[in-house]
Length: 175
Ligand code: S3P
Image (tube, rainbow, N blue to C red):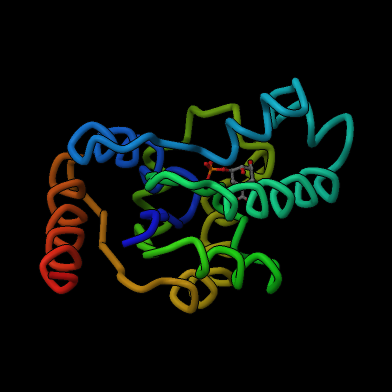
């Protein structure tokens, strides 16, 4: 078994689920957004403002390359846009088992409507932005994923249970 990697749109619950999984599986949890923030020494929103999105995207690829050298088994939560670059998709797949936390635009909007930390959603009509972005990205998430877990209207505990069932199945197959 390799790392468990969570992908999905902003607000799909990747960080919360990864955190809970790390506790259940007794594995360290790593979040690419947080790793990038600490390596650059700046919050993502500020990074987009001061250095631009392209800079952040370069850091994402760099971060994936560093993660591929990680020795222990980890739970890794990726930023919502990480799988967009083709180069990144290959790196992501090589990290381990990829699980897509799939959410509808409406559910995402409900979760993020008061959130100020996502620069890409600071638009006049965030719901429409979310709809457009999910329409453009869904096939990319599906392409990179080994498993898809629907998270709409589920508590994070329920999502964690579903991911745990996948992990247990993989562990059993390995034996
Ligand atoms: C982004 C998602 C964010 C963060 C950045 C860009 C995206 O991560 O990486 O704001 O392009 O979808 P979360 O998915 O953790 O919010």
